[in-house]
Length: 193
Image 1 (cartoon, rainbow, N blue to C red):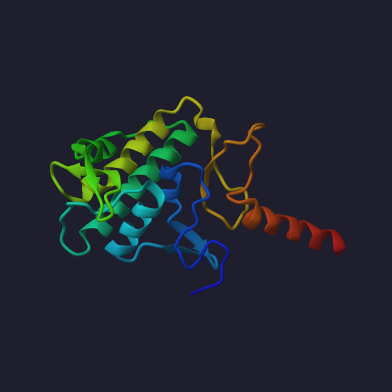
Image 2: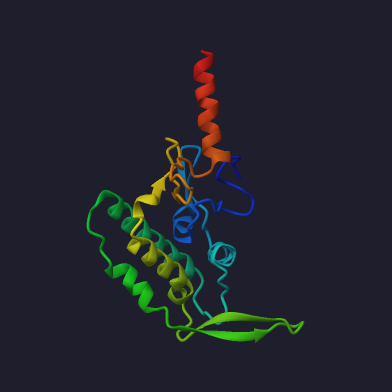
């Protein structure tokens, strides 16, 4: 695997300060080319568990179906975010399709040690149902009245999105440690010439 700053052993970085934007950021620029961190259903399941605490639970699906639906939802969210950023009308039908599959309920579960936790169960266990919490977060984001705080990283080689939760709302980079530092190094090199 490449050593690009957005690629790490655990998958894509969660730097957006909003899970729906982190969902979009599962495609990143690596050595000048788009790189999709999701190559299998397991990649999607790992991301869902890590980013939004969703497990497969009672979901059932054919191999590759979750990957397909996750990529479909990702592009639906990307299109919605990009249209809203430019002031264009957002087509809500595709996202509403995912939201309609969100029929679920919480179940109290005791693990092997007797510890209690809640687990979401789905009336219709499907990939769409598994992805419904992300669709809900995306719908909330698109309806957000402070949508101007949704931004794309300013580094010219980066395509990642983030939600600017800083006090002054002047965040410019997906991550100061990654793109912010690359910009500083680039400016320093220009000053040395």
